[in-house]
Length: 191
Image 1 (cartoon, helix red, strand yellow):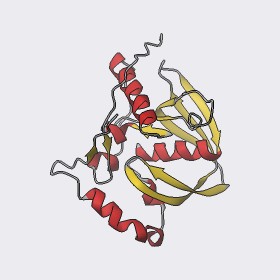
Image 2 (cartoon, rainbow, N blue to C red):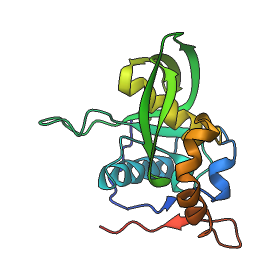
Image 3 (spheres, one colour):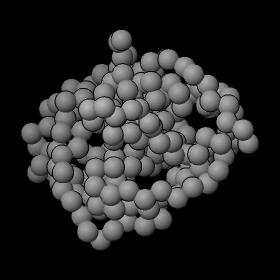
Image 4 (cartoon, rainbow, N blue to C red):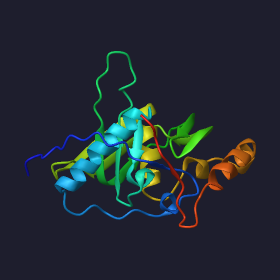
């Protein structure tokens, strides 16, 4: 299949904690269409414009098993090069773990330490429809696991002890209270 990469610069609204889509298990992507490729380009644009290093489809209102990660782009002189993971499957996680701070575009201004394996092997489909295997360690492995959690309806705060969340309870409650009667909690992002 020839890549039909679609350039797009649409800034997508970010779903915040309290939005029901963030707690749903996502569905597999079927065919890779022009519409999907445009959506992926919009996700990339949104991730870079909001200073993220990863973004999952549910965070922008789509229940598809799809996420993007680019942990290098903020380094001086680095180019933007988002890795796209469609229908990902975790193949291997190391037994060695690291505890590091995490944040999330869907939980603005909330940061907490999360324990995760420091190495991952993941299988996914790329934008051309080819299945690939990807190995990552350190911060990139953490970002991939964080985004993969999103497509399973898991937020990073679910991996934090209740005691460590006590200082954040009020902030989380305030964000959740913005959820409308349709179960949506959307933050419009301004350029």
